[in-house]
Image (cartoon, rainbow, N blue to C red; front, side, top):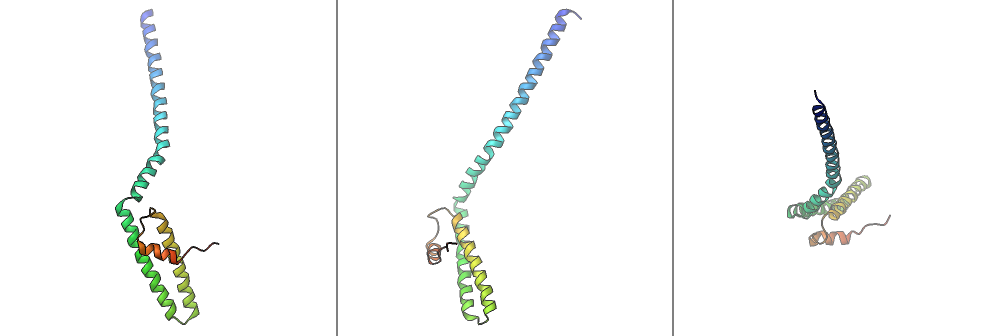
Length: 128
């Protein structure tokens, strides 16, 4: 093996080591960028989904159904004479009201139908 072959072999090994190091650093940077921007991308997708027509309609339907259930519980409470059962139904009604408020907060502003808005205005949040 002559001197030129040894120098060429050293140069090729040196070149491959730097290329490997560059590819490794590039992979680390790429993965870091993907992981950094993934929450941002998911936020865009979540916002687009929440503003979609299907999402809003599903929430409206669910809220209107829960409001009807709330009214039915109210009628049951008025008809029941047993205080224990009435207290249980009142607790169930309060839980349903909390769920209605929570889901109404998830709907984009201005997208709630008038019956839901009226119901929420008749049942304001209590300051605790």
